[in-house]
Image (cartoon, rainbow, N blue to C red; front, side, top):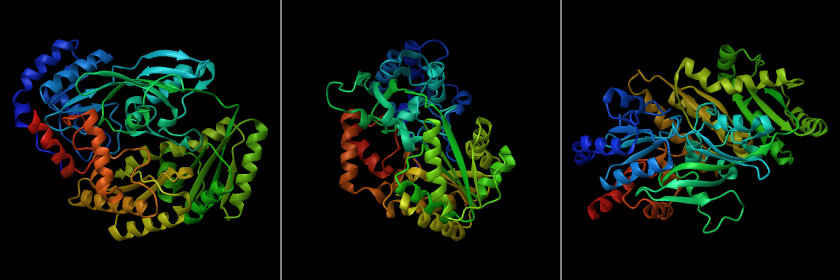
Length: 482
């Protein structure tokens, strides 16, 4: 994966930069020793690594502002970092950049149950947001698989979703307002705790912008009352395409589950060896969860089971207790870790129309045969958010490149059938050079014009989102103008 050459002027001024950063941050918040900066050389896309020039760990919005102001004055690129769980290389450093980590910014600033929101610093982890309000029977809906570790900052950057986004939406549907620091250090408020916040509605521009526009330091998040109850049903099939067709029929019937998750045989067998969830011997399974009162749950489950039975399932297993529900979900929640125990893998994130699931699953199987690499499919089937896991050997010469080529073909397939390159992981470096497969030159120009307004010098999160040649060409005039 090509990255831009570091700016030699920036490299030569490292000592001066570190000294200025230490003047505005507390002791220990600036990390400049090479051995220590290696902790920040990659995120969860571990195939690509580059130690940053240095890393900083501010604890307040003002400290973030001071850091960005200094970097702006010295023409130093900045890569914002949440918890480093990005699967798209969204926080991959360049050799001349400052990593700005928000890990120390993890406080709950305000909780308002009558108006149903919580305001937090964005270094707080996803799951701990719910942890802060659950004793009052509230929860925060977006639930990425990495929710135990991932930070709200990264969730906002990538517009993360999760298993339950089918009903509750992704981050943008649960984000009410942010405090964001611009590259020149300006602090701005966008949106707020109430529906009709003044000014232009820029919140949708910021959410999903992958650190290209500013650093979000505080977020106002919508919280919801916990449902009266929830119950999953596990449906096993002999065929991937049949399972995909069942998903399409459930959605077509107007039933709205909280979640519909898909796993294929490779993922089922691997997670069963790892987590011992007690899954049936089958080629594909669905986990469909519904919620509400006991009567509502049973009514929805009856409709789902009736639809499933028209597809000749191997087994239908309705949960009858919290313990059975936990067992049904155990394998799904363990899937990524289980696959990681047996192989290096690259996790994709294309999204497709639900009606195209059977076709796309068949084509992924054909591409697996063509490239000679195994693929495990585990994904949010209800909204067509695919997560093919391409297994490869990082120690085998050429295997990574084969994996990249196969991944590109799968993502092009998603676009071809009317979908898009990413559902919740973001573009990062992984998909940046595929953006021209989805967007025209005019489309990309419009997006880059937005970045021009927020970050005229193109210092924020370099080499991400936009094709490298295009972004480097955009950066050159900005540098020349300084």
